[in-house]
Image 1 (tube, rainbow, N blue to C red):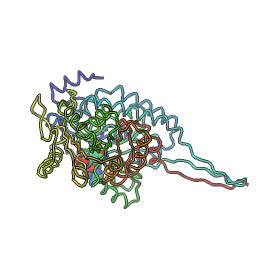
Image 2: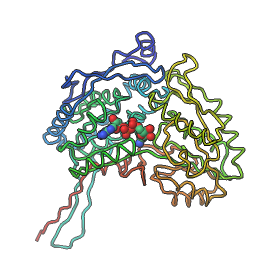
Image 3: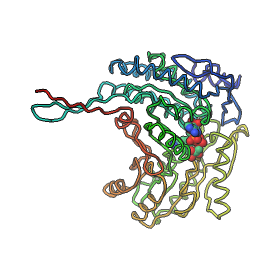
Image 4: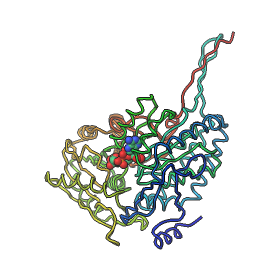
Length: 497
Ligand code: TXE
């Protein structure tokens, strides 16, 4: 196994990595695609292509779904839960054995700082470990029907599950879909984002090495239009887990409606971080900083709106701006505080928000410009940015920018903060910083979001259910709740006298 140092050296010398997989992963092996067309994957930190991958077609998708269907019906749904558990547990260990390769690949594909990619890979291993423990605990209920009857439920796997994966957390999103699906006895066909195809392919091979039978986990690479769309429309897919934009989520939901296919939609957010005057300032400053600048703000659950009580607003934003100005930017492999954004197109989108805000006379108190890696002059970077005193109806307070841009909204008091927090089309997560625990829990109940963090943004792990309200989508991933999406409850009642 190459160490991170070897991989970094190889990349510096050759501009690529030999260990990167090529082809779709179908039926337990890297398969020949139906066409020889390929796409380039770019290193956002250098704004240069570093590898090619297969551009899949509907034909490849069909092959993967057929493989998954056969594996579901002949092997996996009837594999003993304890055996499924052992394979997932082994996969968790193998992910850690491949930590450096997976993390360096993730950094090259997505741009994120290596320390964050290492965290994501460890998180993926933990996700498999968690769901390994759940395989043999999918217990049903029994019902008191009186002396003449017996009634009970069993949880059956839904079948072939499609996973459409975005580019911001490629291995994390793959793991949080694959692991519960496999634990429940479902089979998987995944389509990673065209910007970040490699770690899903590596993960499929690792699962195979862990003993997963052929066909149980397939990965097809390619564009959303040419591979994602045929996958979500496939008549042999029983469930779709989609993570991405609202617009594509809407398309996926409409497609799913045709076949009445089950869907879980995780569509991003514009999450508030409510900071009240009685907070622990240091804790809140650290929390707000990490909430928006980790992964250059390209996190569905990023804390992209600071909703702050008026009495501490000026001082807090001043302190925050000083910290933001001290953040280091650089290529992800150099472990900077903030890396590039994922693509040239996405950089233009982020910059567009700030250009328009500037024209409206916005008060930009930190950052605000496109930039590059100071060491090389390359890469797709946007300065960590704060825009102060933004009105609730401004697009900066309503729309997902998905970049290192923090919008500040000033609240008169806690009630006004609640109003501002909820005045948004999204409802994924929210942060609350206050030393008044009763108030924190009152706010937590009244904020319309799927998950609330109190005094530590991003608190909680795979154990805690995750998912959104309003335009952030519906359905829950992670936790035992996440397992339910991959199960069908069957009720059985019988006369016994
Ligand atoms: O998303 P898409 P994009 C948000 C974020 C970002 C915006 C656009 O605001 O700026 O979405 O990003 C696949 N049928 N999020 O354009 O198109 C696609 O190939 C089936 C939030 O990348 O939604 C990729 O694998 N699949 C977010 C995945 O959908 C299709 C994460 C996401 O791409 C498809 C990413 C189709 N017709 C972006 N078209 C989050 N919730 O975390 C595309 N895809």
